[in-house]
Amino acid sequence: MTHPLVTTDWLFEHLDDKKVRILDATVFMEETGDGLKVTPGADAYKEAHLPNAFFADLLQDFSDPDALHPLTALPHDAFVEQARALGIDDGTTVVIYDRGPVVGASYTASDWASRLWWQFRLSGHDDVYVLGGGLPKWEKEGKPLTNEIPLTTAGTFTGTYRPELYAKESDVKQAVTDSSIVLMNCLSGADFRGETNNYPRKGHIPGSVNVFFGDLATDTGALPGQEALEQQLTESGALEPDKKVITYCGGGVAATWNALVLHALGRENVAVYDGSINEWSADKENPMTTET
Image (cartoon, rainbow, N blue to C red; front, side, top):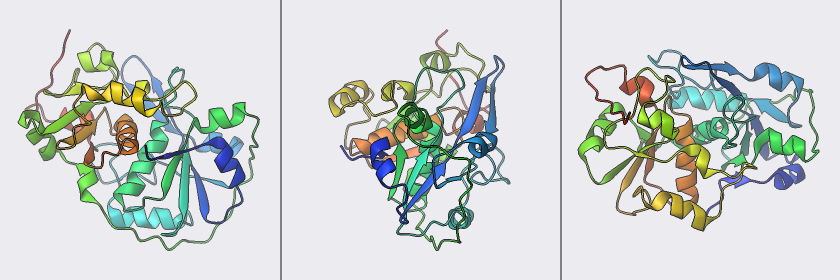
């Protein structure tokens, strides 16, 4: 496997490396029973974060304010500006962490960190990684935290936009009836079957396979071994080299974790449906399927 995750020990050894930029991408998500509530992790960052880490606000700075749906990825030029503001150059090694996916959840896939990981790759920066286990694992191991806010000068990041990593609504409409495309729903089985009220419409896009992102991480936030991952993903068809994969979820977050896992397994023909169910369900002509 390739290794889109770095270990806490590796990062501890590189805390003062000037070529490494650490980003805290924490967002807090809470299941309210009538949808999902998300809030930036800026206050938590101010209280405690990894030494030399900068806060990357996914909800404000790294989402398109002019888009119809929340969490829409920034246009490339706007992303470049935000990356530069964090002191990032084309030669910077970027390591991203968060504090876990959902408040009170038991699974530990760092899908907020993987969301920003995907955005960096979308803008042509491959020297980007997620911290396995995120801040919870770091803190559990007794590694240092601080409330000091680091200073930086503007970076010179340029990047090159990679549209093949981005799926639009029209791409998903094609995938519904195209057997050469695997349409992967990354939400829980309950969400997939239509048993929850977490999203605007219940269920899943027709033709989807369900691979829950939370099953693709160990209880410490690491990736399971290659054999275990392949066993979980083979039935979906996503590992067949002649097929394209489009991952989606509710708002384009969990889908990026599955994209990261597929990247780790050597699959490059993988796009994330950025709008996901939030966009798809807004058009009442777009079908949704339930299994209740």
